[in-house]
Image (cartoon, rainbow, N blue to C red; front, side, top):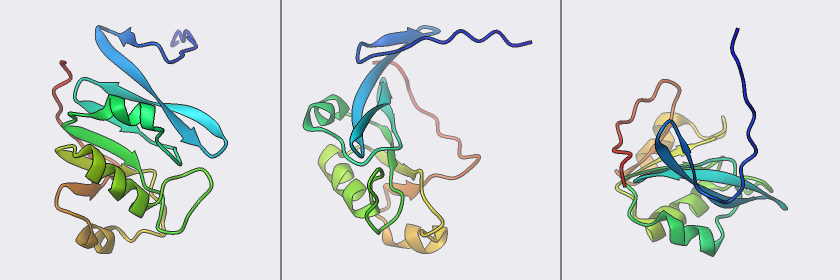
Length: 132
């Protein structure tokens, strides 16, 4: 039987099994949520906007996972176009769009993306260096 211990987090960095995690505050419609940075890897899903103060914490990334629900605007999720602007601003080595909807046909959408931006998919494996 698994033992689960719930722990509330805030904007303060924390460690899990020796891995340093930095919470990244994101807008989710009128509310806020956290994404996370671990070394040169960041996972930012389920957001509509990335505040400027959070963008400052996302420089020098090798791998970025980023919400890109669809092309049509949504109140609580980023669009492909908005996420591409974040990629252009942050310039990670590789970006994977996640939290994508059925409105984005996989093969056709990837043809339209820059080579360093791909759609994430179930079973995707990415090797990243998690050190500072």
